[in-house]
Length: 419
Image (cartoon, rainbow, N blue to C red; front, top):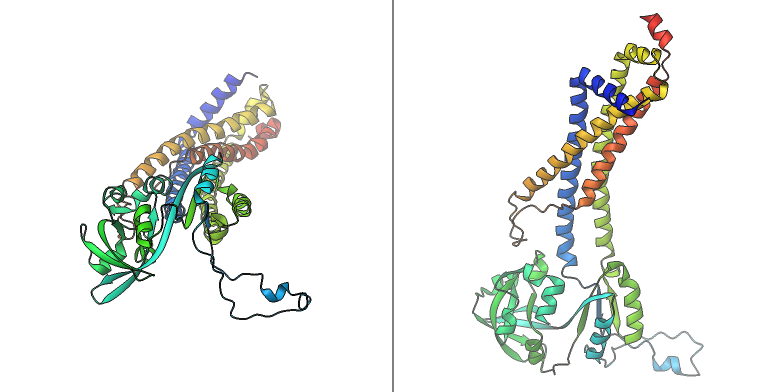
């Protein structure tokens, strides 16, 4: 039997029960619209929350950790080497925070094709002197262009720009919480005391706000050269080397390999933020579960509508089979009805889902914790549209397959005799 004729019959049956067909199509449209809007909105929020951590966290961090020497003299003694020795109050070794041969390490990392970028850093603890009070804080000396490129620093600088640090000597971008506590305005000169007791004057050129209150109360930024000068160290003095990779999953293995090669400590983002990564996966799983549930529910609605249509069209099916249409032909007719409903409803749902995402993206979302976020975040990843389109066809196919299989087995003699 020609497929064009079967498609024409399917179209005629759909138009004969136009209201039922529209109800089924609206069900598919609504489920696909909500699927796209829900996933785009929820994953947009997830990405925003993830960005608060991932944007400011290196994939691998190299540093020197001050810790007690595991090789104690008593363990080297021939007399006591077979004993279990307990030593209390072990003092750290005389090692320093400085990373030796930092230039060679940075060059090696930059030559690795797996590495996206490298940003050196010097961190120091200070006390900001406010009258007779001292406020503890941390100043991170950064390579401003590298830090801005790899960690989107400019997205968190609410007043001023990161490049102001390179244009003004002895300048600082204060954490918003610290600035509020000191009542420091742009252009003010503040005084800080280092752990060595040295005092330094710094000019405020900007505010930094990450959205994490505890961090904003202590964290501030200055140029690498400024912090090295504060500490009285040479330009080669580096305490941290931050690395961003092209593929995040490579972080654990590369951290182990380079830590053994360079003889320094290395932390990878997946180990340090294991709980955070688990939370992200669970939120994504919940988003997909809710969206797919909507599609399955709409599939049951289509099944019920087609089942009723077949029941009401038993005489039509009997006549079709009596004049020569096979059970396979009847099967194809009702599967075509289901697929047409899925295709029409799914296409309209994808369009409305995109428009719903645009509408959500324009809704104002302003909070003091996230000053750079002005509207609700929405993720327009094409993957959601592909999943929604495929799933609408799959669910409607199976919703039409079982009623169609039932219709193909109808005996026309029994139906006509019953009439």
